[in-house]
Length: 110
Length: 110
Length: 110
Length: 110
Image (cartoon, rainbow over all chains, first blue to last red):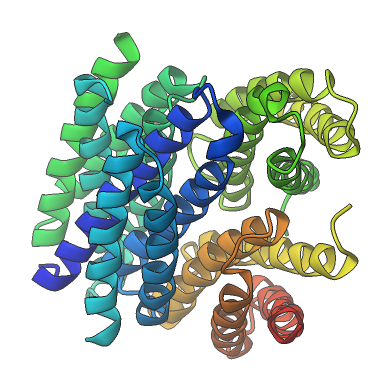
């Protein structure tokens, strides 16, 4: 069985991936696109890193702790950007990012 | 908000990714490695395709239905192989694979 | 040794990934962002699918031919969108996309 | 245009991805599978990290330098394991891993 702590972090990453990718495509449909460009960029960066982190946790890759540390920073950055916007997809994404940042920090420190 | 059906399929994919990647690394630690080699190979193929499928669903990519169809086949194949083994990680993986195959078939037909 | 035809298709995919990802981030810096939004979306979709295709070719995954067929379509779509823009990153991306579409079609038919 | 240094590191990553994924599937066909299990595991870990690194370099992601540092270590580890084996796919993989480690270290220090 996967360790409970791993499982929790994987699930936080996966929720964050979905929220970021949904926010990414929703931002691209927003009227004021110029205001969303950092959000679009960071949504993708965050989702891509969470994807490798979730996979590495499930397979117990050698570099998993360093990756979790890096992932926590990317989630924090994306959460901060999303927090600046009113759209529901941004609010939901910020929440998922902060939860994932917290889970990754806990893993990185373990 | 993500459509409910999309959300269900994304979650089935994500559970399948975790089960496949955990099965992958667990198979590599099995004593009778020779017996597990198809399982190792298909675990990875299945996880990699589920990963792109989950991401494409969340971002509503243009090719999402074709990908779901392909993903359903890969999950079926991996589930069939895992079903041949007694190990708990294989049993759990087969279950996740079949559930994901079902969810992807539903999406592909939508 | 990897078959020569596989190798050629992998390299076309990898050039396409780089061109798409560079075009993606360059589009996000363009002044007239609104004009680039389809390009941003398709750059990512195309890069993500090429990534899985290149990996699947190198590892001879079971679903590699179907994936090549799907990838050829995504490359064609992205190339068509990039062709509508004057920016150098779009021109280079269109070229890489069409070359990859051609290579993937050849593989899919093999 | 992508900076020349970025381009060189992307290409080293892409060659390493192909070599690792080809070595992965070739190892799974080896007779003495037990001897190859660390190689199989590290081939995948290395390929997956190189994939994110190449993508991040092309899109100038914020975390690209830290990722290059991590990637250099994974390549070194995989290269060391591959060097222990006589098979041609392992020899070629070790070479691609060491070249990628070198390119990533240079990027990380830039």
